[in-house]
Amino acid sequence: MNAHDSERLSGMLGSLGYTPVDDRDLADLILFNTCSIREKADSKLIAHLGDAKRLKREDPTKVVGVGGCWAQSLKNELFESFPWVDVAFGPGQIHRLAEFLKSDSITAQGFFDFEALSSELPAARERPYQAWLQISQGCNCVCSYCIVPSTRGREVSRDPHSIIGEAEALTADGVREVTLLGQNVNSYGRDLPASRRIGFSEILRRLDALPGLDRLRYTSPHPKDMRADVLQAHIDLPSLCEHIHLPLQAGSSRILKSMRRTYDRERYLDRVEAIRESVPDCSITTDIIVGFPGESERDFEETLEVVDRVGFDAAFAFPFSPRRGTHAATLPRQISREVKSERMGRLVELVNERAAARAERFLGRDLEDLVEGPSRTDPTRLRGRTRHNRAVNFDGLAAPGELTEVAITDTTSHSLDGVEKLLVRAG
Ligand code: SF4
Image 1 (cartoon, rainbow, N blue to C red):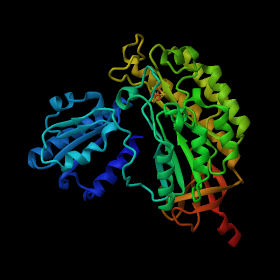
Image 2: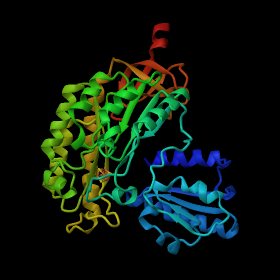
Image 3: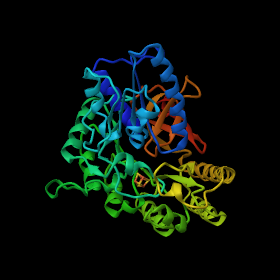
Image 4: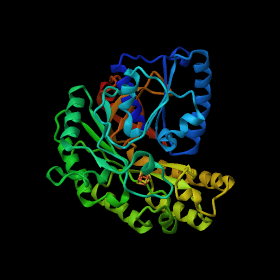
């Protein structure tokens, strides 16, 4: 979501006549779009703000802005601690940056209301053929570790006509792959007025029907809302990719309860089973928090058991990081850095082992690949992405943005290796 907000900020700045510069010293406007999910991002930002202070002292005409969840969590306090910041705004107020930049006043201005779903903004996409499409904003869940409900507000679903309209404009502009975005994407639609109310699976169906849209993805669904109609959509809709990112967070029901995740270990495993029954070849990826307050060795072993049993195609593991204003930050029995780090090591090892085993099912298969550009490790080769969301490095001639078939010749826990089928046929 934060990356997409950055694309929209860039798009808006482009339409106001700004162009990016490589060197911060040369910028008229220095804008930070912040995330506050983990502590590390906060610390990095503070170092960058120190640099901006120096530049502003050297050239007071420079404008310094801070947007995103970190700004939202501090609100006007931000100007007290960092008086060289000219404008600050939360994720629901992205559009106010343009208003500020066009105004005569450049005194400290903050915009922190949750009044609008800032989705109707131009976006400068990283790749012309892939796009994010925001379908909702905010979250009604109360996960005890999460700062998002306080920085992005209650859930607001976007009008279906507006979503379809943006998707049509994207495909007309050459986009082949769209990823729907929502904090809790599969609870989409419940807050819409009765006359316009449609659910998540229906929006998937309407988007799948659009000509020119080859691939449809979404992130992140909540396990509690992963229901039969969504799985049926995976069976029925040709564009809907065989990949579901299903955040686990912990494998111990006791810890899940303390996290206020509203599902337990059995319910999560039941959802995985339902996915595998509906779409046997589906990639399942996840997020896991290690060292949540009160996590015992036995609780952690239960997480390892779930990881072993599910066999995720990939998992993003994070040590628990207490966030300002969340319930989890105040819980007793916080876990030491050493224990978190030791558990992270064991978890990552198991995740990689299981992901490598899962990847072996692709060996010898021909997989559709959306070409993203040169391989990062060898620029003479290409890099693409399968419908299962696996990166593939391959020998081939296809151009970025093309869909091609790749014969898979090798697999690792993180990527696949192969040869474009056209080359195989050419001998
Ligand atoms: S579902 Fe939980 S973790 Fe996800 S955004 Fe909402 S409160 Fe945060």
